Image 1 (cartoon, each protein chain N blue to C red):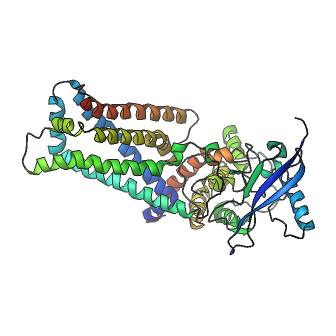
Image 2 (image 1 turned 90 degrees about the vertical axis):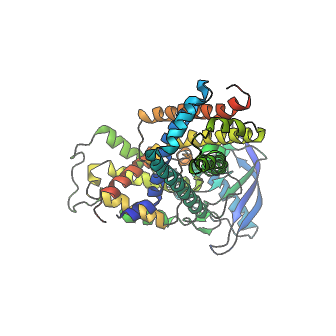
Image 3 (image 1 turned 135 degrees about the vertical axis):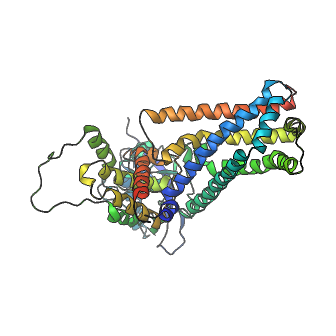
Length: 221
Length: 255
C-alpha cells in the first residue's frame, strides 16, 4: 500500500481531514490565547507586543506556511468528500426522517465549513492583509489593537463575526470528537471524556472569540 | 396491546427495471390487522393487485424472522421503518394508525442499483466480502471448539460485530451512502480473533479498496447507521476499521 493509495482512499481522506482538523484546533488555542491579551485593559500594549512578535519572528512566519497548508488541505479534502458523497446517492429520498437518527450539526459539517470559509475570507481581508501591508511598507508601529477597534465599530461586521463564531462552535462541537473517531480511536472510558473535552473546548474558544468584537463595539475595553 | 384494524394509503416506488425512471404509485389497503407484519400487509396489497390484473410490487424477503437481512424498504423516511433495532419483516402494523399514509422507497445508493420496484442489488456487499472477509483454515476434521483460548471481551466484541446481517440499512440511512458500518463489522469480527490473524492486514486493505471501488460514500461520523441498524452494530467497529486500515496501510512496505 503506497502513500498515494492510502491517502486517496476513503479512510485516508478522513485521516487527513481529522489530522488537519486537530492541527487547526491546536492553532485556535494559540489564536484565542494571544488575542485574549486585549482583555488585559492596558490599552493594547501587551497585545500589540505579542502581535508584533507573531508577525515579525521568522519561526512564526515559517509556521504560518504550515497553517495555511493545513487550512487549504482541510478545505480540499472537504470538497472532495462532499463531491464523492453526493455521487454515492444521486437519487434522493422523497421522505427522509434524518432527525430520527442523527444530529443536525453532524450532518451540516460541509455547510458550516462553507460559512467558516466565507468568514475566513472576510477575516483575513480585515486583519491579515492589513498586517502584511504594514509589515512590508515598514510601518513598525502598526497598531493592531486600534485597527480592531476601528473594524469592530461597524455593526454589520460585528454581526458577521458573531455568525462566524456560531458556525465555528457547531463545527467544533461535532469535529473535535469526530476527528478522534476518524483516527481510529474509540474507547468506552475515554471517548465520552473526549466528547466532553470537545464541548468544553468549543464553549471556551467560541466565548472568547465572541467577546472580542463585542468588547470593542460596546467599549468595554 | 389491543388488536385493531386499519385502512391505509400507501405511496410505493414503482420502477420497471434498472434502466427505467420509476415513480410513486398510490394504493389503498383496507382492513389491515395490527398483528400483521409490514410484509404481510404488502402480501395483501399484492394479492389485491393481482386480482385487479396489475403487476404486483417486487420486494425482497426471505426468512421473515429478522435474521436473514434480505428485507429492505425505506419506510416513512427510515430504513426498516420507525422501530429501533428491527427489520421490515419484524415491523408490525401496530406501528401505524388507521388512516395513515405510508411512503415506501427502495434503498437509495449508487452501489445498490434498483433491480425492480423495491428490490435493490446488494451484490456490492458480496464483492467486499470476497475481497477479504474470510479466513484460511486447514481442511479435514473440524477442530475442537474452544481449542484456542480467546479473551472474553474480544470474543464478545467479535460476536457483536458478527451479528451484522448485511441488510444495507447503514448504507441506505447514511447521508453519504457510506458502507463503513458494514465493512467495520466484517473486518472487526475477524480482526478480534486469532483465527483472523494471518490475513489481518491484507483483509482490511483489500476490503476497503473494494468498498471504495463500489462507489460507496465516506463516513462523516453522524452515527445514523448505528441508530438505524437492525442489529445495533456499534460505530466502535468503524473506529476499529479506521485504526486497522491505518496500521496496515502505514506499516506496509510497498512504496
